[in-house]
Length: 135
Picture (cartoon, rainbow, N blue to C red):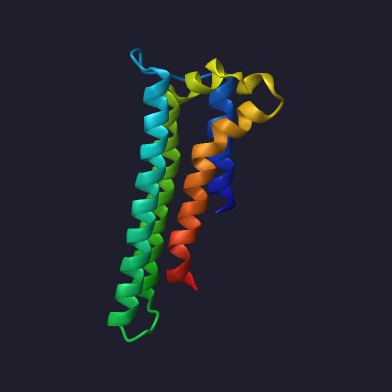
């Protein structure tokens, strides 16, 4: 999990300084809608992962098996991959332009916090929605 956090913050903060690519027709509002969709999709995937894991555990009589752990870990890894690749997509869809055009970049650290905002929100939702299946 710490690697996921470092990758997500690294992508968002480095993209704020120098974008790798941006869609040519991307507007600021495209970036905002992409950020909202990114957080919503992450929440849906995390909720599905948690519910499926609990369902499989109930079917197994509450017993945690290797198969159950492998399934849960594979889904978690897929969600983490989505979180990084989706963040790249959000930044490429114009979210960076939204931050740069706003007054946030003039206040120390506010631009960086806004750039990391979608990732941090998605990460917190991921942790909250997956917690019942890991407790």
